[in-house]
Length: 96
Image 1 (cartoon, helix red, strand yellow):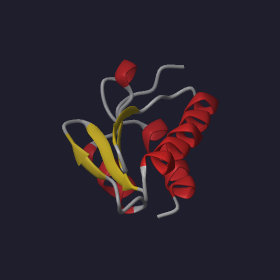
Image 2 (cartoon, helix red, strand yellow):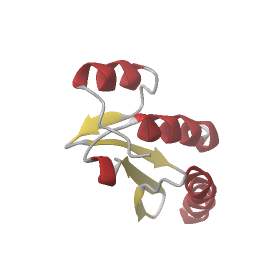
Image 3 (spheres, one colour):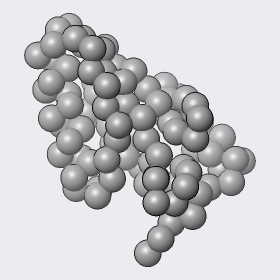
């Protein structure tokens, strides 16, 4: 089942439910900070497990103790429910 991009009003409403994320260029993004590189790697492994389970994979940029995640549904051409659902799950393991 192919998902359709959400209208901007729904994107804004869903962003309110994940306040540490922001919309940039058709993606939702968030940067997480950890004590060290090891903490970043542990977090990325947890995110990887969630992403595999959801069949949806974020773009990940790791810089020592900072991890930037970006979510968008490429095959839908924009933000969908999948992005917001995964972001919410990631927030739960991010410890922030």
